Image 1 (spheres, rainbow, N blue to C red):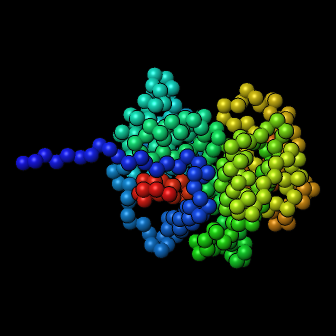
Image 2 (tube, rainbow, N blue to C red):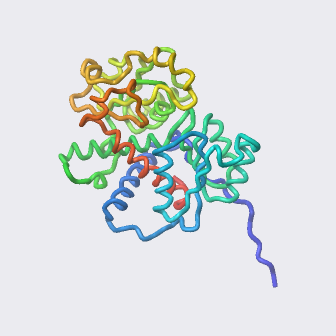
Image 3 (tube, one colour):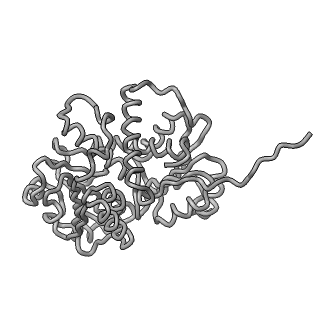
Length: 345
């Protein structure tokens, strides 16, 4: 009787390392699916989920940095799809102690069905993906933060859909595609030229969202990121502005965004950074003097520190920070489902 053989030559798995790798329509469709996951889970529409496509599957969470929103969002998302999320913190495995990233990638990916990694240098997530047998999702690197950008887009879509249609006390964002709500908006960024801003630059302009970034003169985005943003903006009709004056960025903005000035691993630079970012705290006075749109809103990916934005803005009716945080779950769920169930974005 002939023995059955199995091919060990597997196709290269799909990854989600940055939104720069995807088209505007792909990103908008991800946001649309995230909204539909939200109504399915929270409102059982069109019906409560019974399928658990990740039953028997494991997603490894390799996190070299602390996490609240990303970890909770990922673990609950995997559970919703019937799978198991295995958290592997820096103290749990040999990575960086007795084992290289290359070896870790090959070993872990041989035993799990997907990897979500929060790393330091972006070259680490690229190496992890290169050597992995399974899909890899970038949960944060020093260059990019793709799942955060998706959550931001989803939050913006929800807000502008409900405002345009005068909806209060109900959720109807699933009835309109984000391609109809997002193009034409202007985002003003006031703060550090960090991974959040860089992810915004490689995602928002291609959708048709203009970005004006105010950062201290000594802080600049990577040249390749700026080149991508300008090329995308030229095609979509969006505009890109870089300035050191928050008022210039805020002029006619629909959305004001900021983030921490001191990222994980930069604590020893705190005193110097606080000095260089003087005048960058987002306040009602700053926004009003800058001339933002009358109905402007505020967003922040959290965790927030008081020097970045004052309480009056952060806890105001203009603030979308908590829906933005919740939407990390629905967008991460969508990426996991796309890569581990559908087989690609």
